[in-house]
Length: 205
Image 1: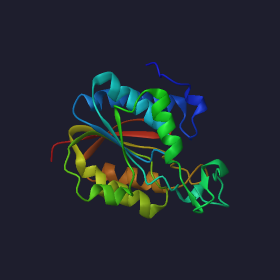
Image 2: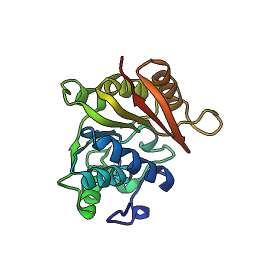
Image 3: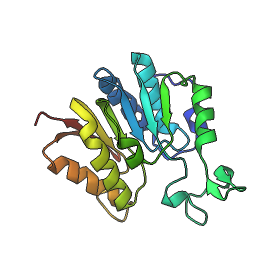
């Protein structure tokens, strides 16, 4: 795997080992159909997924409202003043995301879907080879992402969930809850975990 830009220069919270795993599984998912990520932020995960899709001639849909998650809002731990639209008093990571795509040469591979996850899913009809969930980390947001998109993964395709922390002292529990819910649904079998990234495969039901 060779990325076209320095991933360390892209805002985001993805461990490089997890990024390499994203690329690996996206290569497999892209062999089945288009891939989709929920929660793009400034494009760090998009680089790995997009590169895999570009390398296989596939498309990545990148779903994000680009208004930031709960932790990105003013006064919160991960607020970034450079991504704050002072005129409109809102977070807006979309310009930075588009710059990432342009620098990486992924504008003809990645299709930005600038909408809330549940809005984008309302009329979705394209079976997906891979879905990566890394959106809002409130329990409500995480459950919406799982409920809206897990059924869109085709048989044999992959569902990846980020920021899985079994120990509450290490991180928020919403991704861990939806990871367990997906595992117990009967729709997926667990394949592996890479640090906080969990990988499931859709089974025939």
